[in-house]
Every structure is written in structure tokens, then in C-alpha cells.
Image (tube, rainbow, N blue to C red):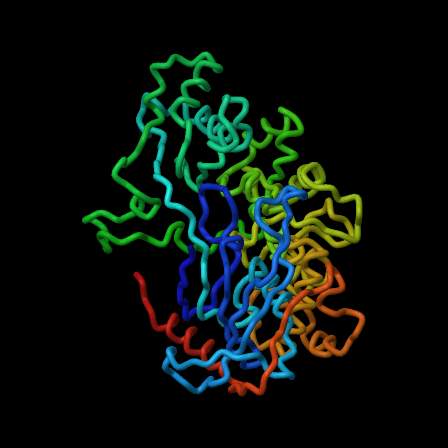
Length: 463
């Protein structure tokens, strides 16, 4: 089953809101409809697959992506739209585009007008929260330890992997879908820590009538918008946006008890949207970094003042989390969804040294690992930049910290003629199927839609 959701916006096809940790948002996309920088209105999606279970994947590997173009772009009535093979001069590889838009950030590939999403069987929703009362407050640190163990090392609590994956959270509670063992595991945790079972009510079911996360978030009658679901967490300029939210590898957590203890002591604002299932649900034709899929959690890793934070992370923590022995391949270490506007990696010449605060933006660009490289890693970023140059060589869509935004645009605009950097040389060859016909298109169509969308957002006030 799938549903078609129409968006007249520039969609960020990266990580849709997922708490059950059974897959990432990009894994649920079946078809994308877009207006591209070349003016063509297209629909595309996978048309051929192969079994990948021998490699540990539970979904097939996408091998061919096909697409069509709309041949009557001036027609406003959607029921009269005509989808045909793309013209011979279309020159966009649908396999590469499919790879790029699912995980490669938003605002840089074109305007998404419609997305077909796969729906899964609806599972019962349960929410569990820690009681914020005086008698429970001394147990708050132990609750955080319990939460981390339930979601990252469930076997310690005699919880199955399947029941652990059914739950996740971005706040202080548990959001679970289907079978879970939260309250039973909480009692086992108390016993293991010699804590009287009288403390068990400190963790309990919240709002049993809520059937979804949205139900839990509905604003009350005393709010400005009663009955509505708020934008949560709200947009905010983070003062600590120079250091991003780190992807903590599950393999590092499993490595030793000391690593787990370090995480408990330093892992602030943990976001448990990851899990082992996210690594096996990929069709292997998307640009979500492997660090995203292999992470146990995303977290902010220090209480220290910002400058000390940076120095400590890059010199002491980062080399333990990731293999940095190959100096030609910087690893993807940050989560894309929570990257601040000033985010950078370490110094290019020494990955264990933080990018100094006193550098100007131009100096950061020259001397420090870019935010794009710190999010996607060197190899994946190289491929995405090559696709960007093929899809949008004139940089019609150029947003802050998006793919190729940090390049020298004057030089980059000529790189499309450089045969040494085709879009598919960094990974396996593209296997796209591009239909051809004599379709016509309006060259400025994408720009008109983009400008309209931005003006609509600019004229809208939510508060």
C-alpha cells in the first residue's frame, strides 16, 4: 500500500520523522515528482530490483530507475497532464537523481511537487514517561541509563531486538509501536541495580487514549492554537551550532562497557531514531550516509564550554568513534537534520584539531572540513557534487550548506565539461532508464514555482 502526498514546497527528502527505528524516511519513498532546473516536470522511481538478502538486506536492491516527462507543461488541469518519454536532449540520469534526492538534502535538486510513500500496517501506539515528581527525581539519572540500555543494548535487560526496535524517542519519553517490554524491563533494571520496586511507578504509561505521537502533542485549550499539533521542536538559532549532533556508532557502543559509560556521562540530548533495522532496510540506491544507518543514537557529546567542547571532541572522542587512518576519506560524523548554519569539521591538515573560532567564513572554507563533508563523508559527497553538476550546472538552486554550495561556483560551472568527473565514477555505474520523445517544456518553470513557494512562505505567519 502507498499514498501520494502532494507538496508544493521544496521538500527535504532526508529523514522523515521515525521513532520505531525500523527504517529511515528515505526507505519509504516509492516515486518522486519534481520540476527540475532544466525546466522539465518529471516523475521517476525504481522499476527493476534484485534480491539482496544474501548481503543482509530485508528489501530488494534497486537496479533500474525509470522516469517520464510531462509533455504539456502549460496545462493547469492535472487530470489532463500527459506523461511521455523524455526528449532526447533531456540529459538527466534518473538513477543518479533518485540516489541524490533521497538523503542528499533539500533545496538543491529541484522542486518536489509530489511524493508517493509506502505505508506499513498500523501498529498500536504507546507512550511511556518518567514521572516529574519529587520522590522520583533522584532516579532521573538511572532512568536515562535505563533508556539508553533499552534502546541500544537491550539484551542486558533481557529485551529482544524486535521489541527494542519498536520504540524510539527524541525527547525524554518512550514512543512505541507494536509489541514492547518497557515496564517489564524497567522492573528488571531496578532489580539489577538493587533499587526497591516501590520505585517502579516512576515510569508509567502516559495518555492511553493517544493513538499517535500527534495525539500526544495536541495543544490544550489554554494554548494559542487549541487542538493543533505544534511544530516540535520549534525552529531556533542554536548558539552552539558550530558543533553538530554526533552520530554515535552502534559498533562503538558494543565495543566496551567503558564506551557505554562515556556515552551516558557525555551524551546530551540523545535522539534514538536509529537502530539495527535501519541498516538493513536500504535499497542501496539512496544517499543517506552509512553512519546514519549504523548509529546507535545521535547525541551532543559534551557539557564543557563551546571552545573546550570542540577541542576535546576532535582530539579525544572523534578518533575513537571513527576510523580516520585513511586521510583521503573523511567519515560522515554529523546528522544532517540538526546541522547548524556555522557547522564545520576539523582542520583539513589535522583532523584532531578543531576549526578555530577566529577564522572568517572564507578562511573556514579554505582550512576546515566543510559541513557537507562532515555530514556525508568524502566519498559520498564527491558523488553528490558530481550529480549536482549534471542536474543543475547553472546552480539555479543554491541553498546554504546544501550540496556544492561551498564550491567555487565560477570554477564549478565549467566542471560539467570535465570528462574526468562523471556523476557515476565514484560508485557503481548508473543503471537508469531514460525514456525519450519530442516533449516540450517551459525553461523557467522551475524558477517560477520556486519563487512562488518562497513568497508564500514569506507571507505566512504562524505566531
